[in-house]
Length: 154
Image (cartoon, rainbow, N blue to C red; front, side, top):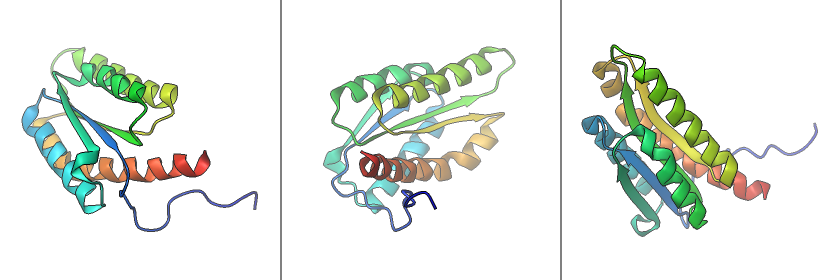
């Protein structure tokens, strides 16, 4: 063995963490459900409401800029990106999905802050509805786990 496993193996604990959430309004019925599930899971894991900043932007392409503004404040232990991109009949789906995803990843790497990416990319509304709750909860769990991991590694 080369060293201790730094992954989180116990129960997730969000106490004392500060979390920033950026939610795209486009496909708002889906993104509202993502946000509701995410916020409920954060609360269940001990993140205090006063330690959560939740902002909304027009669409998925605007999410990285808002994440960047939050990351620059250096007050968040983790960030969460929420959005929903549903395939249409044009190339626009690929453009928005690829660019928003790359932007979210770049923020995480450039600022060394965990960003849980829960921008759904689906073929249709039915797929989005099927994923909205689980992915919202997953984003909260990923944010907390990665915040602790980065803290352990620093």
